[in-house]
Figure (cartoon, rainbow, N blue to C red):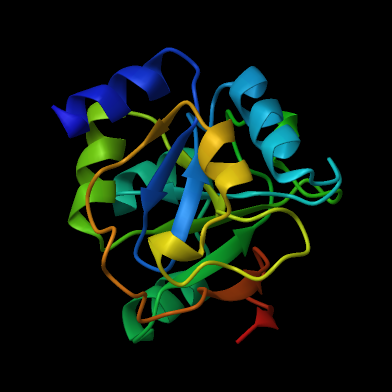
Length: 184
């Protein structure tokens, strides 16, 4: 029931609070500009601060961006979750993109997220479940009531789990295989 409800909310343009492979996140259908705007409002986040998206497979990643060889190597070798910032994404709303037109994407390892993205058949926005500028929540009880009351649905799983990772590494990879570490 919980999974079905989360999926219905996403399909109808709503927002969810959900556990990811790092910390609790606020998510929505990454192809829905109105849902993306809701997330900026919930977080009180400036529109020029880009959001990252999650995909469940290499195939979906390749549907969204041309993946440089260096990015594949980083994905294969990374021991912790890694978000890669790619140039020239395809078929994504401008609301998701950084000022230079790039987008951060992570292939998730979390089974719940993988299944949700697969059934939604679209990438999922993932941003930390906190107001902009505040500390990221390492467990469900760290999330403010303001955030909990602002989303359309809260996933019922993993409320007791403490995250192993406070955030993913973020690495920008240009199409010419040049790289820059944005967050370790």
